Image (cartoon, rainbow, N blue to C red; front, side, top):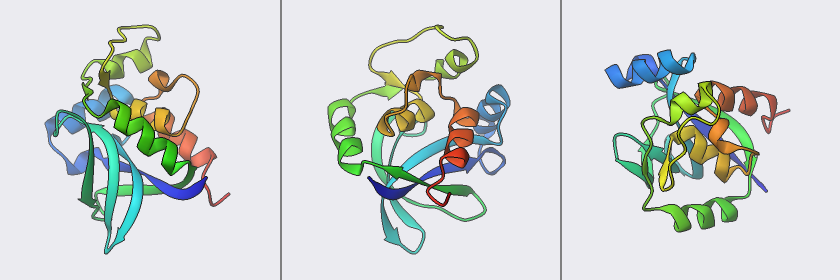
Length: 146
């Protein structure tokens, strides 16, 4: 296990879809990333499922401090990378956010929502139940700074 970060994108900084996701989820966030490596100068090597990129992907992101909230967490990075390599063709799941509100609703194979992907890489139980609000709460309660 090593120290890394969960990064949460502040919905008000994004587009209309970001605000809709935030409203449905009941959190101020619309997206999250698991940081795999700190590249310096607020640039990070990240993994998540992104509606902007069409699905699961690994990407370098420059995270402006007024757009992102980073929470330190412990993660088995090797596990996260193996997890990603097995699923990198998975598409973004637009309807998954409803599953976090209505358990058992719609659970397709080969599609992931960002918080579900991050929860699964962190080896949390029932990752499909994690919306942004629930994952953010988990990160605060399990912050590596505690």
